[in-house]
Image 1 (cartoon, helix red, strand yellow):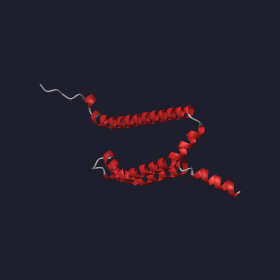
Image 2: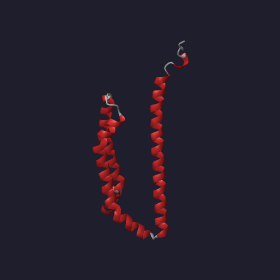
Image 3: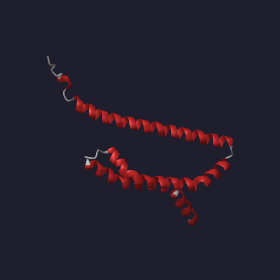
Image 4: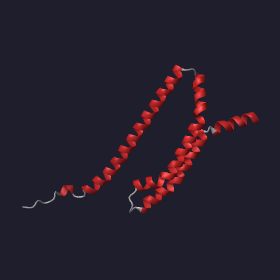
Amino acid sequence: MSRKPNPSTRGRSAMAACSNATGLRRRWFLTLSLVAAAAVIVVGVVLWQAVELSSLAAVSEGVDRWGPLLGGLRLALIGALAVVWPCLSSLHSRADDEAARARWMDLRWRVVGWLLVIELIIGQNLLGRFFSAAMHLA
């Protein structure tokens, strides 16, 4: 005796694949968000302890001392992202999907460019230096 397939399950395998990919993206987003939140909390606790255990001048001196090294590290990480990007795009998109791979490769320089702009404006205090120079000239 053979069983007939249940008509109510027809087409569900395609839906399961789509929802599985969406679920995987949501899971990655949630995981990365939790990691970022944990990192913010850890940095906040470390900074809070540093301020409470030492004077503000000592903390400022430490920031000034480590600033150039950390700025170089951030620029090195941005460069590493540009170099590793083709491997990341091949992991994200399947090898047979050339259109998705091309889109990922097009995004590489846009992402790296915006990271450099953010680093210059915030990390290197470009706006602060500009306004300070403008105030001294006026």
